[in-house]
Image 1 (tube, rainbow, N blue to C red):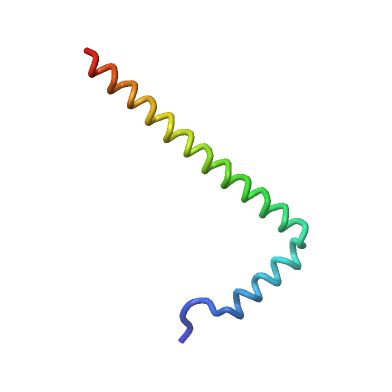
Image 2 (image 1 turned 90 degrees about the horizontal axis):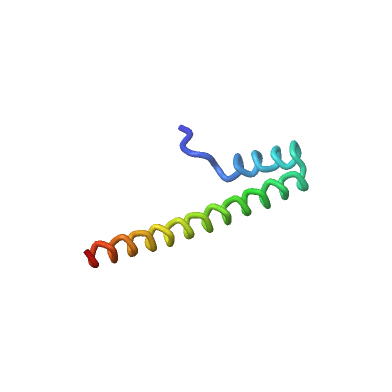
Length: 65
C-alpha cells in the first residue's frame, strides 16, 4: 500500500523540473519569489504600524473629549 511521497519521487520531480526549465530560469524564479515575500512582509509591517498609529490617535482624541 502506498502512503505519501517518497524521497526518491521528490528527487525525480526536482530533476525533471531542472531539465525542463534550466537552472538560470529557476534561479530567476527564486529571486523573484524572495523579493515578493520581502515586499509582502515590509508592507504588512508598515500596515500594522500605521494602524497602531491611527488607533492611538483615535483613542487620544476620545480621551480629550
